[in-house]
Structures are given as C-alpha cells and as structure tokens.
Length: 64
Image (cartoon, rainbow, N blue to C red):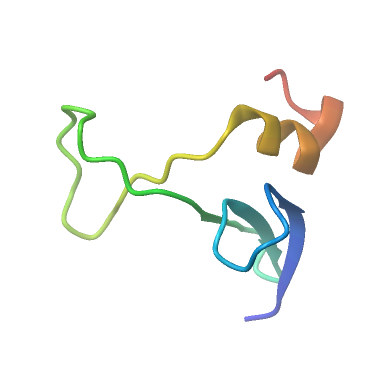
C-alpha cells in the first residue's frame, strides 16, 4: 500500500494526521476514544480527530 500524507495537526510525528492510499481509501491517525457509549465490532475502531484537520485535508470538497 502506498500512503501519502494529506494533512497534519502539528509538527510532531505522533499527532492527528490524514493519509490517502493508492487503494482509494483514507487512513486516519488520532486518539482512540473510550467514552463514546457505542458498540463497535471487534474488527473496527473509532478514531477521534479535530474537525479543522478534515477542513485542512479536504477543504470545500465536503460539507464539514
């Protein structure tokens, strides 16, 4: 898989980041929240990132 960084929320290595892959998918690096109250299948997870990071990565292409 080829991964390209689209947007980052800081200048460090371990911070919220959005990546694009050559599989036409998006990878998201962020915090794993535990207080959401949702039932998530064992093979999935939730990742929390700042809304501003979405804006930085996708701009006006989405309605956030």
